[in-house]
Length: 350
Image (cartoon, rainbow, N blue to C red; front, side, top):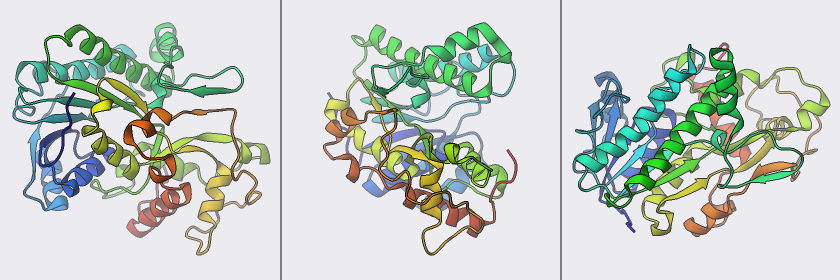
């Protein structure tokens, strides 16, 4: 199985996205050459200026779901990191959404098979929305778990399904399609695949940030809801799981060179957090944001929640413990808050 190391050339799809820009940054810093795909030259030129590195180039792809979309982009690269997705779950028939995401997923694999003679690994950025479904009581989710509830809900509700359910159903369908594709084609291709499933991704942004509208969705919802009124119970309960975007980017790059990652699925999560944890982080001195609720400081520190994600498989392959893989919540939240304050882009509306 392959070990793709610098100075190999890596394709990063959707290179101007929140997660992808950080991946490109880590790749370049590690010594890889990078070809990014973007939807127009304006986005590509921004990245050329941002990275200021001759090892970065870009190509324009307007429609990643059409057949052969990645044929030119994937030529002469050694690996591909597929982060791009056409996801607007709030709009219309979920069947169209799911089809587009599935076609772009299998499309890059078909391009790798047909014209990507150098490709040794394709890594997909998935989500724990493909793993998680509401548990009955205490439960620890692993890579063996799949969200069966969201596809069923979309099948029953159609366009009336919530955007979150549509999103989850699309991501489940895309990831399953990738695994089915490699199962069918494994004897006729020389590359393997990897899927990485993170929860909510927070942290500072290096993609083009001109206004509130450019704050990515996970950061936007977090910032908008930070000061919302909550009961003591709501403050103390598990709000979700998270990962810092910088840690997630490094995980993508590190898995390129891990032979044991071949054809494996990984959960990448820094852990769970409550709103109390967030309040405590942002109220540390020096306080960054005025008016952050206080709650009961320290009340949820070290709390073990009824359900969480097991990342031991990832830690084993990376060869490092979790405390050396993930930043603490306080660092993530404070770095994000400082950035949006300095840039004047604290979101006030979705």
